[in-house]
Image 1 (cartoon, helix red, strand yellow):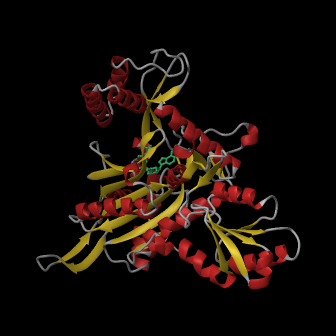
Image 2: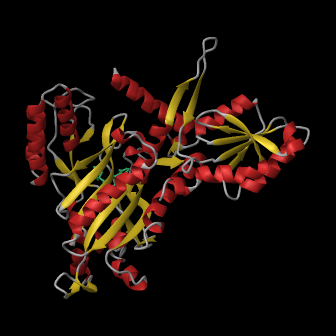
Length: 493
Ligand code: ATP
């Protein structure tokens, strides 16, 4: 029952996102391109605001973190050094009847969730442990055996007629250079992090950065996901907001704990209920990591990763040192406890990596509400997005009460005085009530109505989205009232 409600809520969010210009399927008129999406006029604004929130929190609020913007194309050797060419694989399995392809580990995870739901905790724990072993040892045969032993059928055909499990590399490749012959195979980056690692020395030297320091970046990443589902949760082209924090060897666990806490705080500052978030500490660690945790959010389809915090050791810089032949070392002239200079070393790295699109989806789901406004005499409801005012795509909607008597001119005058600082929208069609509802649906925190009294005493009615409360205020106070509510100070301190 609860599942249906969640499914329904998720469907409503998806159709709302389309109806109001937040997210569209890519190339929709050609029936779309699987797992690729476009952000519409309001989606682009919301996305920018989420980026700004992250950038301010990471770069502007930390004197020792700087931001860069590296290219999507990188030298092919980068992906050899990083391990992506040989190791960035998903184990996949096909059902011979439905011809559908699945990630073997996800079929097993779904089964584990079902065991847990049915109270079969022993079975769930055993399967989890066996799966972890199989993944760690890259034992594809064992993955298939686990699928068979646990009676997993294809959700489409209902049969257990499976192929072998095979590794599938997730990187997209393309040809670099105009000539077919002699052109080189390059990859679309599957993560933004490597653009930071290869620029470690450039930034450190040109910015005279002292350890510990961080480099942040927001940008596109591409992964040829075996299965792409759940709207913008798993896309083939998506955006990441990543930060690599370079620290002294031996201080990595301290900084890992710091960033684990700091990043959850960033999420919670938006007012998301605390119980919607949890950490998922990794037991099975990637070869380059000595600690890792995910920040998970409870989506309508269950708790899923939004952000990863990884202690990546000196793996990446060491690999680039080896593959490029260039020293990736830092000279530390600070003293250690024994009073000796640290000298040269390859720094350790703590990474925070959040998917912008998943954060966008989380934000929409969290904000979406169908509020019952019925009274004893009348049935009524409204759809609204309770977005944090800092994230709202439009901050102020400006409505002249009527289209005559100089009200539009006065409304435009007010809009002109605000629009440089706040994203404004002007609307003069339809009754005021209807105009309010349209703004509720896109999350606009303030609506201003300009009426005949405005012309006499320079006051307007301000209407608040969440409470629907209306107040008469002086035009000269507008800037402060709105400015206080949408100030980044409310989120960042
Ligand atoms: P998953 O296990 O869900 O595939 P991951 O562990 O591979 O994710 P990372 O490589 O740690 O993900 O990437 C960091 C972040 O990038 C993730 O927390 C997620 O928010 C985002 N991300 C990764 N893959 C995708 C994708 N295909 N579509 C959208 N966002 C993604």
